Length: 359
Ligand SMILES: [Zn+2]
Image 1: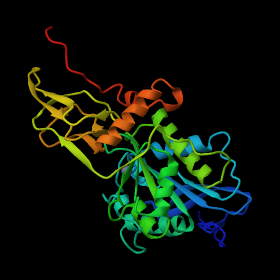
Image 2: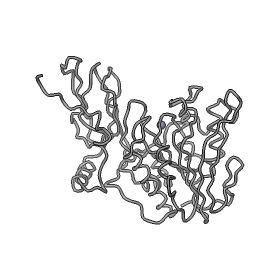
Image 3: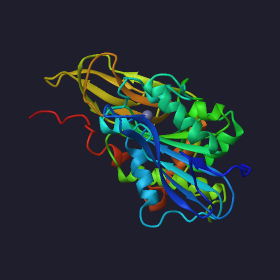
């Protein structure tokens, strides 16, 4: 657990006192007209010292899910903290959001620019100012992402499970799936972890969408972490199962054609199981894509028209014993609302099973 910092929280020159909440606008740039461009930040500070938890979204400007989760968290009655501080930043990449773009106007990926450079490019400056003004004052970070454009991710936490503090945070969040790794060089979570701020990300859903079930996963995760840190009452909700993934693989198209998807994200698959069938535009079958190992579908394309080499399914490997254990858990809890999985909801409008023969 984090030890309380002695220094008071100060962002953009604004000190947030005990028991106070504040909306802060952190200037990171200026428009062509010279007006300030700012990142909106909402801080909830309790009456008692404790951990500072940072929640970030939309570092990729087209990934709105963090925005939806923070809105849900703060709408109506925000969490009443027993101790510590919650720092909510629904949109870090303000320009990306405005332009419906993953990137910043200088065509850089903000999530490869951390911890930033004070007198560097516009993206490096943004990363630097945000990192130094906000991130370094916090004890834990939860960063929300979705799959890239035309892809769909089943909710999965990405975390460096070699770090004890990150491991605790990742497990407490309560996602079924945790993908182990430090993250790419320059990514927000890797830089934050290296600077001593244990940080995880949730990868869930699609760009440009606020999917209620995915928002629910994010909300539950935040509340679980706050319970784990004793910042609010209650014990963290445990998922149906939780497993750490070390190996994932992309299954790619071999032919140009039209895909019929047979498995939604989140489904368990056996080695050699059919995932999708590739058809010609006249309905002739090109080939069938199968899973190279037993595991779980982490993500998939939402675009049925494909070319050779394009990624179709992202599958995570599970050992034989884990796969059997998880299958059993899911079977035992099928139909219980508390353990409802969201695979079918997520893929409801893209699944295209094998077409019926003859017309
Ligand atoms: Zn992202």
